[in-house]
Image 1 (cartoon, rainbow, N blue to C red):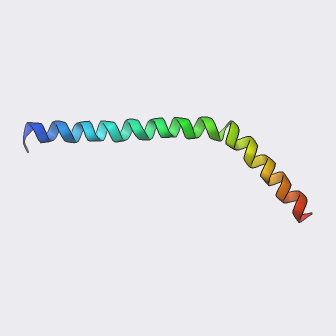
Image 2 (image 1 turned 60 degrees about the vertical axis):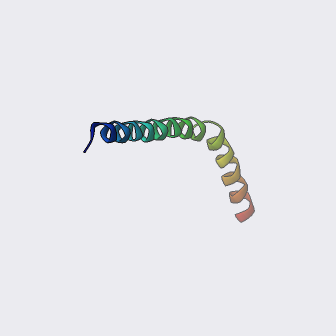
Image 3 (image 1 turned 180 degrees about the vertical axis):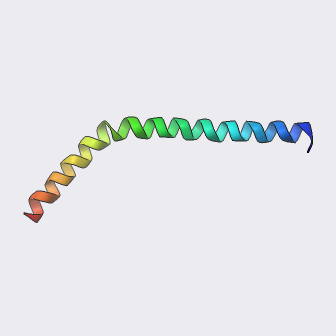
Length: 51
């Protein structure tokens, strides 16, 4: 494997890992904030409709 190809692969891996990390942070922040409250409201509405 050439040195140039190795560097490109390393950059791709670092890019993918950092992108996943950022997406994970955003998902975690949203899930425990806005989306969590929204999901609880919907769940309570579903419970009211069922009962």
